[in-house]
Image 1 (cartoon, rainbow, N blue to C red):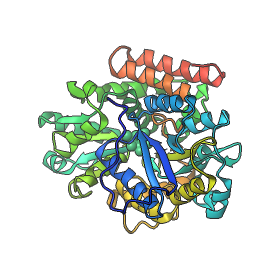
Image 2 (cartoon, rainbow, N blue to C red):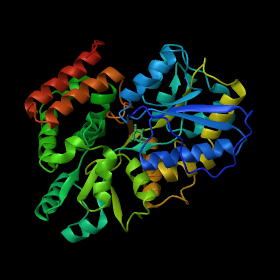
Image 3 (cartoon, helix red, strand yellow):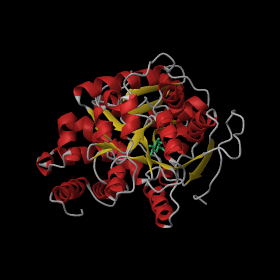
Image 4 (cartoon, helix red, strand yellow):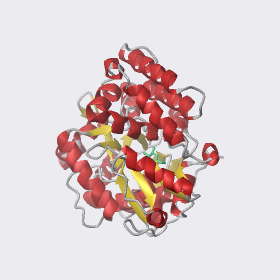
Amino acid sequence: MWLAAYLSPCVAAPAADASAPVVEIASWWVSEGEVASLGVMRKYIEAQGLRWRQRIAAGSGTSRYGDVLKGWVAQGRPPMAAQVIGYDIHAWARQGKLAILDDVAREQEWDEVVPYGIQHLSKYQGHWVAAPINAHSTNWLWINRAQFARLGLALPDTWEDLVALLDRARAAGIIPLAMGREPWEHTLLFESVAAGAGGAEFYRRAFLELDPAALDGPLPEKIFARMSVLRGYLDAGFSRRTWDEATTLVRQGQALMQVQGSWVSGEFRLHGLVPGQDYECQRFPDTQGLFLFNSDQYMFFKDGPGDDRTRAAFARTLMRIDLQTDLNLATGAAPARVDVPRERFDLCGRRAISDMRNANMRRTLMGSIAMGNANPGPVKQAIYDVVNDHLMGRIGDAEAARRLRRAIAAAHDGKNP
Ligand code: GAL
C-alpha cells in the first residue's frame, strides 16, 4: 500500500523529551537513498531537542502525493511543513494556505544565496513561501563504469556518440538504457533530448515562457524522432519498474546507463559506489552548460500544527550550510545555495555544484519540465500525456509534435490544455 507511514531507521540522536515541540513533515521520499536523506533532516531536528514526525505518501511525479496532501488539508489536518516541488508551491500560495517566511529569509540572506531560477519558485508575489533544500538536476547520464570500460568507446559528448555507445551495449547483450514506467520518467528523458536538440534558448521559450512560435518548424518532430531512436534501446521490462529499480539495473551492470536526476547518485552512494571508479556522471549530450533543475522545497501551512517559533526553527535549519551539505551528500544533489563549500562532496557532487553556479550566472539554470519546475501543473500534465503516448508507441513522431505544439499554444492562451 503506497500510503504507508514509517519512520526512517538511521537516526543516531537521543529521543527528545516527550513534551518537546514537534516538527511534523509530509514527504514522498521512499527509495533507500531518500529514506537516508530524511534521516539527515531528522537528526538535525532532534539535535535541537525537537521531536520529528513524518507522514509519507509515495509518488515521485508528485501527483499522487499531491492528492494525498490535498486530502489532509481538506480534512483540516495539514502537517506543519510539506515537501513540494516547482509550480505546486504557487498553486498552494494562491489559495492563501502558506506561511510567509520572509523574516527567516532576511535573517539568513536567502535572496543572496539561492539560485535565481529556484527563487522564482520559492517566492510568491515577492514573498518567500518555501525553503529550498537542494538543487537536483535532471540532464545527466549515469553510466556503469565496468560495462562502459568493456565497450571500448569514449564517454559520449554528442548525440551521435551516445547512439554509438548504446549500439555497442546492445551488441554486448546488456540493456543499453534503463527506464522506469512513469510518465514523469519518460518526460525527464524528453527534456534532455529537447534541450540537447534545441539548445537553451529554445528550451526557455518553448517550456518556460510557453511561446508556441518556438515550436514552429521541424525541431519538435526531430526531438520526437530522437525519442523514437532511444525507445529502441529500452528493454521490454521498462513499463513495469520504478525509477530506482532501473537504477539498480545500472548499479548491478545489467544495464549500461540511465538518464535520470541526481537522486541516482544518492542511491549509488548508499550502496558504496564511487563516481569515476564504479560509475560515471556525464551531462546528457549537447546539454553541457545547462542545468535543468528540480529543487525539493518545504512549504509551511499557516493553519498547520505547532507554533511560529518551531516553524521558524525548522525553516532556519533547512537553510543552514551544514544541513545542506550533509543532506545533499545523501541526496546526490547540489545544495540550493551557491555558497556551500564543495570539499566534502564526491566527484559528481562537485561537478553538480560547479555546474549549478555557472548556470545560475548565465541564466541557464532552468526548471525541469518532468518535475514541474518549468511550468504549471496542467501544462506539465499535457506534456506528460504526449510524451507517454509517444514513448509507448501509441502515436508517431509527427502527431506527437503536433500535439506538443497544441498543448503549448493552449497554455499560452491561458486555456486548460
Ligand atoms: C523527485 C524529488 C527528488 C527525487 C525524485 C525521485 O520528485 O524531487 O528529490 O527523490 O523525485 O523520487
